[in-house]
Length: 282
Image: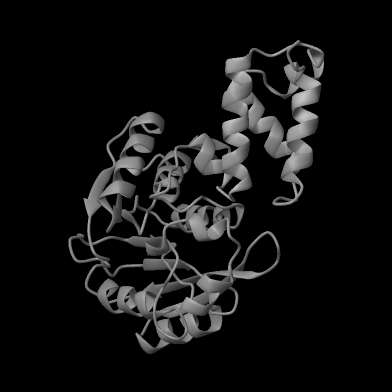
């Protein structure tokens, strides 16, 4: 006799308690991937017996999760700003904290009397650029990354979600980029020590997207600030960084030293310093 939906979910949930604070949710999502039964059907058909091949696939997914592989990588998707983006081991997993940068950049775009040319630097999955394009109906938006594998994911997301053209640029920071009215970046900014201290789950994300280098993790941001002065058009041009709350004051200082003005630190939904914005006028 095969196992039922309820039995399989209970067993999986119990196994997952050791590695996640959301064992029931994780089990449900992986069960849907293996069987096609969503949360509602899992409840409605809880006594349904599941085929052995689907049970085998479900168990394989559970084992991957038990090895601390992020749910987003197992499912190859992650929601961001109410849209589904493809992700994989070559891209950072989008996080709710990053949605704050969408709100802030959109607010800035709305304050302008022209349509800006926008760059999302260190784009990863492309979630920031594509979301900004969709929320603001932008015609001039580019995304760039040093990783060709990440850009393949970003290109897939752009083609799936946005009907207009998005410029995709392989570039080491701003080396191959044009000039823009707005540069947005969620660059690598963790220190090496912070990278060692993160959870086993985060350690499975690409180190290229995590470590910002230097004792304070800000070496890449320093380079971006220096390079950006040759890549910002100059009339009400703005730069937006996401960084750790422990770094925002230092990023503010770096922007000030580079002659940016109207520098602001913006808090995320958890009321932590998250975004640093500066204006550059030639």
